Image (cartoon, rainbow, N blue to C red; front, side, top):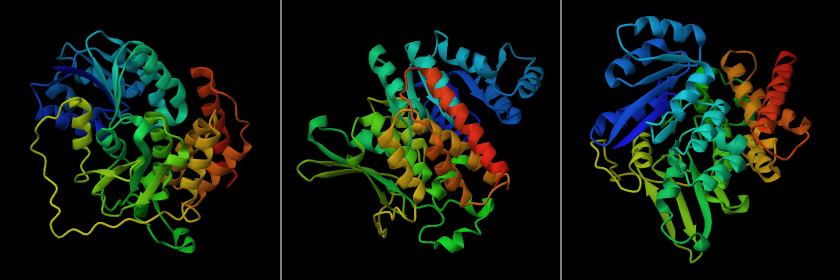
Length: 382
């Protein structure tokens, strides 16, 4: 039986991870739940799954939860200290990093240093600190199993020796504005951008999917996870979201992983690896389906083009791009900037940045803090 600490338990990936736990009660148990500030949802989760430890990042929310759970012998901690406690305790062997944003970097590194395996749903961790994270995992013999549907697909298709790989083909739905002209995008509202055609996700990742920044982050994530240079990582627009990604080998053979747009499938695989568990989740039915693919137009998807450029330059620049994007996305959701300004601000902040080598966690956090400050200043002056 695997014992889990779930970071981000109240979000989309976190709640679906708990669906997988319900599906596999003889294989999985929950040691700790950690989230941001959703007291109602985490209280329900605690009462159902009876973890031994709970943490909320928000101080007031943590105090309210502590009061609500006074009838249970479960400690409630707060802030990053609570997150760290959830991943460093002896009991859990696997940490599900379902928390959104760069904030997942520190607990992931801490978990690896504590000898824990990672089920990685927090792509920002590898975007901001991929070299450091992967080196830590290699040095300590910890596994990082991807939960993102695209990276899970690639992971499942890697049956041959790495030397026989030709390239990775990462699919993208294209989001809700596929094919829209630039002028029409000026009028996009948060409500419009949050209506993804296929996937049910959190607000931040849904906006990233619309701008195609999410796919850019996934390209950088794939570079770190699978060790291929950026010229060997291609993106294909696949509006049906049935083929989750593909691997092409040097003989021309292409292996693909297909499935319904249901995150519970890659979550379960990450937790069951190296075996596969049965599930009662709805099956893919290909009868009558037409699957199409097209190359993205990088002029129409500047976020994707920027991510390739940033990934190739490396150093502290990916952390800067990620931080500026987080700030800009939330500013858009709050109505402070327009849709097209998201990528414009991110690009401007990246152009300002003096790229440095990453030497440790502190160098990443300093670049992240600088980028957030500059992005906020540009938002105020926009």
